[in-house]
Image (cartoon, rainbow over all chains, first blue to last red; front, side, top):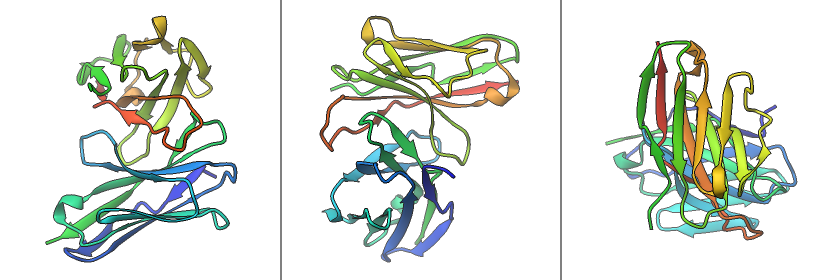
Length: 111
Length: 116
């Protein structure tokens, strides 16, 4: 079992819709959770992180964390074609400098 | 502030040849990571340094891979000899050690290796 699991997709949504990306993790000791966006041929770039239960909003992005269910999600409101990319979920373990990545979910936003 | 710098961006070699990748982390970041990313997969940790010390190299294939981080700043990852299955993107990342939830990982542009 991988530390972080994601559905590989692709997830297709129409422009303007809400895209919902999900991730589960196995280590209950994980402290923080991160969403990275990776365009084809580029390196991952941080979108946002969350470490408290509940929601965290940043512009069109909302990260949600449920530690009891070991579940993290990313909502993208008003999806744009430029949001089309692979989204990587990562968990930082009890050792503050160890990060585990999921295999990513490919998102396609259709005009 | 300059980001994580990697070179070369692209490298094509024949199998059994050696190859080396270089990384310069963000200034002040004491933790440096080398990740391997295969197509369609997430990054997988090869080695993690805290300052000069390799604190996690359990996933590094030590028969052919080696790494060093002299003076706790720049790092080099070497493969010798390269095999066809080593074709991948090698990502360097850095972070600032601390207990803060804001301890995030910043990636370089990556080095894409093709072994023929």
